[in-house]
Length: 146
Image (cartoon, rainbow, N blue to C red; front, side):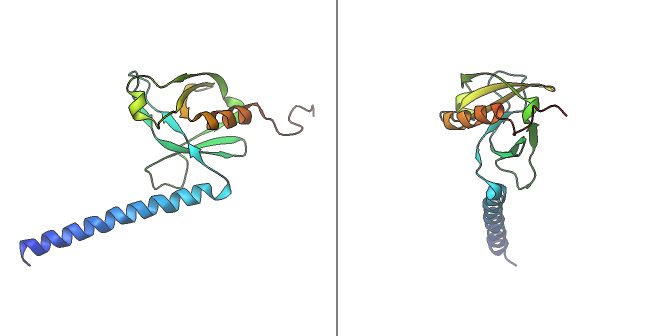
């Protein structure tokens, strides 16, 4: 086999892998959204340096939990999950410095407290309204004594 044929075969295989990966991401996103809508939700996984450590993702409310899926992963399982009763809203701020490049446009940085420490999320203003409503909502009878 000539070198140019080997190069052409390699380029074809690489193209098939890229198309397959893209198709896998589309199918995964549809799978995640099957039980309800998803929304753009970024999560700060490393707090060491200012403005860094953000990963783009997709959020989904699943009962009493907020699930976070990495955007460019093929895994059908959430990478992180937070229970509603363990999160408390601390405040919000605009993205600063390098965060403006790392996050989706017009996203706000949300700071929450959990038993594991501070949780930083980034979402759009409309998603923030839904998030705050979800945090404040309780299922009927949740406060009833047993």
